[in-house]
Image 1 (tube, helix red, strand yellow):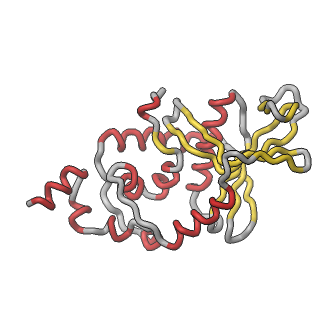
Image 2: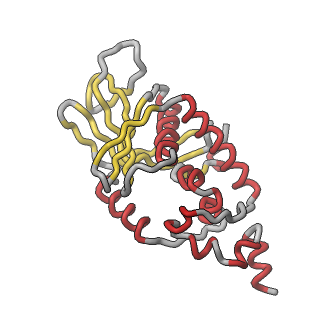
Image 3: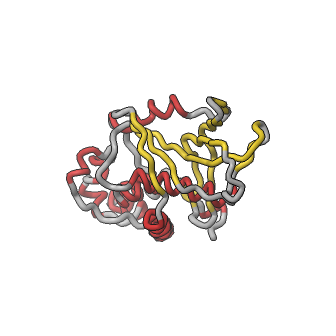
Length: 221
């Protein structure tokens, strides 16, 4: 179990799954740069993010920008959207909402500006959100969804045991790397072309430095 001082940003698990070095540059060295992909993603989330919005549509409740936290995984952050569907099965775990009577099944929804990927990094982020919500409310979340802006379609995600195991393993790795303060080595791949930190990551001096302290020491010599 982690304490409040040890919690890492939940959104970082997707970055870590994409590239541990990218994540470390952003969260350990606090390096960041935008490109058209990150800007498009920000614009999509502006349409979704409203922490004070609560909608009731066709019998379902929609909550936006929901704060989540897990002391077991060591994460905190914001879930894009939660759909609450009415639940009549008394044997299933459910959420209650003071404003709306009844029992509700939680379906977390993550918004992405692109299209479905060949890997599981989007599913990892959604599953991590689900595991945070399960811990917070003592519920079970078997499914979630990802909405892709490019295709304008939703993809259903099953929170399988293998996906949950992957999230657990990544959380342990992220905390280990963060505690070490060391930046993983650069491993150039085709996906580097779409990374907003490409120029920072490929900087020769930075690639040789193992930490911020070491990098600054190089600059002073």
